[in-house]
Length: 334
Image 1 (tube, rainbow, N blue to C red):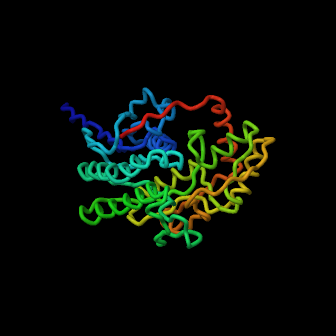
Image 2 (image 1 turned 120 degrees about the horizontal axis):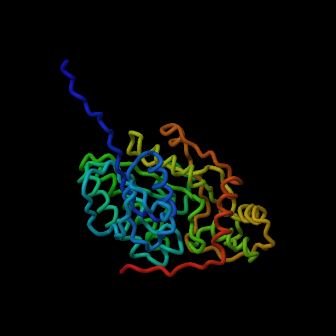
Image 3 (image 1 turned 90 degrees about the vertical axis):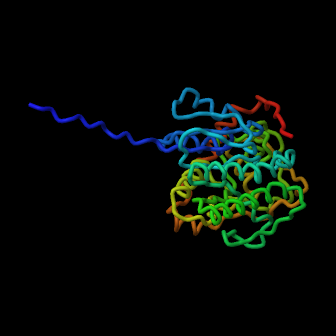
């Protein structure tokens, strides 16, 4: 009896994602999320503000490859790429005030190179933009159709304008080359893997409270922020990449807190003896920050789930392992 030929099973290839800034706070969490979703991940980072500690747990994972490279240089990768997630950039005031030229370069040249890679591979592209493109807003809460109130020549301009340019470049590639693009505007986010000394309010308040040092509030503390836990943010960003719209989308938590109120929340959560001290408000520091997430709710069926108390408990536990360790020196690019 003649045997019928054995048919080989078709093995579905895993999608390949390139994550720039993969060793950073959000880039590393995104890499974890993508791997859990069955992606192969190529992480690119020059480690200026990122840290190998954030991705050390991925060592030996056959689906993760790390390349130490400046994304402002030509990006060449062999093989297929399905998604490019451009997260590379200094993202905290202490970083972009110290590295203004590098910040502008990664927002312009780096975005251009990452878009070029996506076009070459016919991959979908997502730019990690920021609520800072709204500047010191005159509209509250901030909707995606608000154009912003930004000083091009102020000390924060290097970051704000780098991100505004990267959005414009992304839309130019979408219109000129029909590239599939997505734009996420990230509002204040917190969680494990933030650097203690990165100048953002969560690590600053938590580290001060853990050491029973004065908690520094700028101005009179009436300025507001809205804090989204990192796992909620990453899920929203993933949904955005997989949707069908190139429109910018705010991803953040609409629960708004004054800085004075937030300082009191942190001191209580830590059980600290810290007192609150006030210092002058930095130049161009936004007075209000709250996302309107109507578009995210409608398009992505997304809204944050992690309550502040829950997210802060995990974050404080992480910072307890870091307080007193100091920080490694940061190399600089020209």
